[in-house]
Length: 145
Image (cartoon, rainbow, N blue to C red; front, side, top):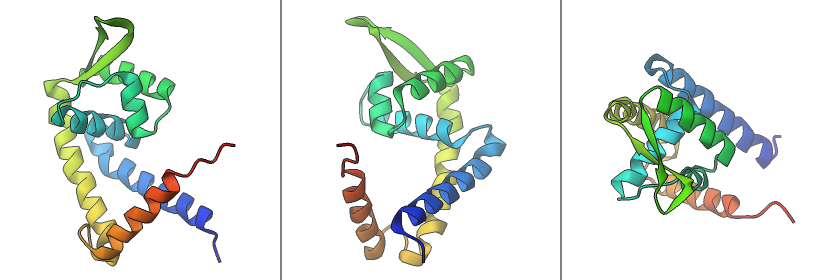
């Protein structure tokens, strides 16, 4: 019998591999997708996030977000600008090209999520909602002393 930690790790790996494979034809990795889709969602909510804010939102390490931002900027998918109020802060914005890339990627990942959650009754199912609540409790539990 597997432990809950092992099952979480296996599910995480299964998800990451599935997303990587589905997005490969679009030229995106799972990490790039998380960056771009999260930035898209924050922009739709009216935010103009900094690299640090995006790192906090995604759970990715700040240095990794910085590296992804530079690469995605070089690819023309995001624009990085210094905050005039604090030049140490770099603000992020999707470019038109970035939006063109991320919108179909979001739809592709949504289809994967539908397939993953189908055995629990789909995205709107009570079992899915219960799982989301339990996972949120675990994510909010500090592991460092």
